[in-house]
Image 1 (cartoon, rainbow, N blue to C red):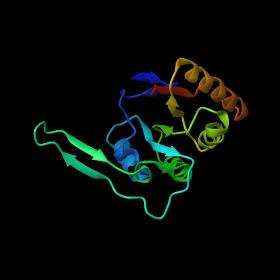
Image 2: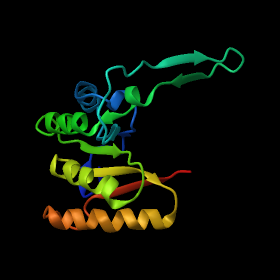
Image 3: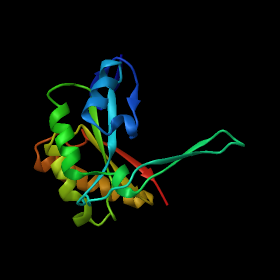
Image 4: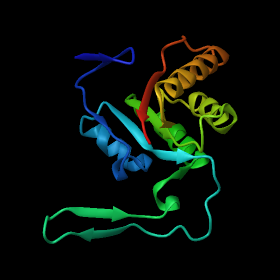
Length: 166
């Protein structure tokens, strides 16, 4: 047993944001096979267009590496799609559910409303995918604490996973 995010887990296996975490059915299969948590496929606050394109794969025959390329809309869930997935999964599994939210900036108006929705929708944590400095991480931490207070959640309970990106 291992404690993570205040929860006792049978093992430390948490699925990263990927194709396997982009649908409720996939996440449930992961849970059935022992995964203790899932960082859900990235989501953003946008409206899906009519044509979202498809993933394309290419294999480099000299190295054997496979590369994937896809338009934004085939890789990023809408906030509504992510909330629907949370609401579908929460009654069916007790694994950690951690949405990965992509904002256009760290300006609070760009991401706090969506984080509020994700917290209210049953997220155990939220991965913010737009941190470029240590100060950005501190800014995120301050705003998440405010959201926890607003929703009556113990301050500090929500795990912050901030990837420093450039």
